[in-house]
Length: 434
Ligand SMILES: *[C@@H]1O[C@H](CO)[C@@H](O)[C@H](O)[C@H]1NC(C)=O
Ligand SMILES: *[C@@H]1O[C@H](CO)[C@@H](O)[C@H](O)[C@H]1NC(C)=O
Ligand SMILES: *[C@@H]1O[C@H](CO)[C@@H](O)[C@H](O)[C@H]1NC(C)=O
Ligand SMILES: *[C@@H]1O[C@H](CO)[C@@H](O)[C@H](O)[C@H]1NC(C)=O
Ligand SMILES: *[C@@H]1O[C@H](CO)[C@@H](O)[C@H](O)[C@H]1NC(C)=O
Image (cartoon, rainbow, N blue to C red; front, side):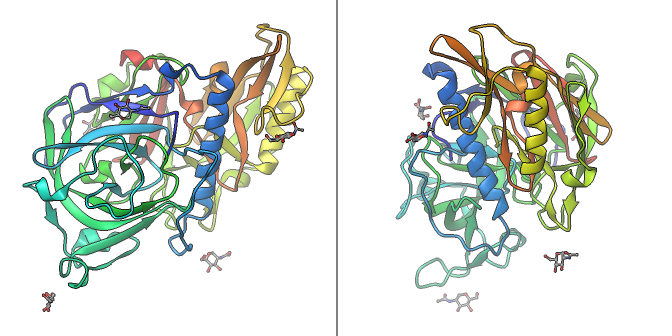
């Protein structure tokens, strides 16, 4: 769902994993694909904002009953950040899937592909895989899907599981739910019996190099759930750098503790109205010396809506309008530089600075239940040179009712999703050295 900025995941080394032995670590390396492309900082940031906005839109209308029709974003709005490279079937066929903690289903475009978007790799061909099987529509897997039906013998194999999976940004995929072997490329490790969507009709914000999506959400069909891992983590290097990043499944405790500071932990909260997302308990925000006058309820779930989530698939943190304005105004009051007007830096709030002056910026601290996220400068401002001067922009956007912690704010941080203990931990880390 993205066009330019995404990360290519290559599995460098992995131990054999099986569905009953969940204790071995799988390591995947990520490289930010924007890195080598010489994009201007401004273009990079604008693309990230567009992606974040598309994601926000997707969440707001993500209830299962929302009507979904195929849509397009003609200005090339990408919504994805990271691609995970895997192979499916026997012999293995490569796929590149968007790493998406905001959804559960794993799917890839599938032959004969009557309605598919362009992709760089050949479409997955189920007819050539000797280990592939269809699932029946009365299977637990099929019934775990929000929308599924039984294939009628006229158009589909009799009694097979046909799914439709939609996203709030109007993207949608329809096809068969199948089961096959997944191979983690480069490591030789493979896992049999992983359920995934063989997408025949796919439409929406798919303008990138992806061939589908790998759901990393909390539901039973997601990759971490199907692999039965107790935890997974990611550690993103600077988005504008060249260094590889890492995704780990079932990582050892000692590896995690090797960060550069104290590990902070906060509960992962369940929202029955949206069992996919990773909700957090955010209590407040401090800008420099000012704890913003925002009641805790502003960040909390209200009868299944609102709340705060962490999403590695979203680039920029977005805040509800009222909170956003308080952050922006406290930032401007403390930096004391002229505001840049006009829409050249839209949607960011920017200040005009002397060329390469690296002006003072106040601290930005997120206060979670039991944990404090003290963001380093590079995790919440960016600077762009502009006709002999510099502009300094706040890398946070005004969003919908859900407060979303995006991946720009998580650079150089090792973030652990402890599924067993419903806990999110983070620690500053040198992500290229894990
Ligand atoms: C389809 O499957 C159902 C249930 O197994 C069976 O009753 C029906 O006869 C099948 N139809 C065809 C055309 O095979
Ligand atoms: C798209 O994927 C292909 C196949 O993996 C790769 O060769 C190519 O470099 C990718 N393009 C971009 C822009 O990442
Ligand atoms: C991750 O889970 C495995 C077991 O599933 C456990 O052995 C390991 O200690 C956990 N790692 C962390 C960092 O909690
Ligand atoms: C909470 O949400 C449910 C379902 O959306 C709705 O039926 C109920 O009226 C809501 N309750 C309140 C207090 O808003
Ligand atoms: C804003 O951008 C649009 C299209 O990019 C342009 O036509 C318009 O003149 C710009 N407005 C300002 C105030 O810069």
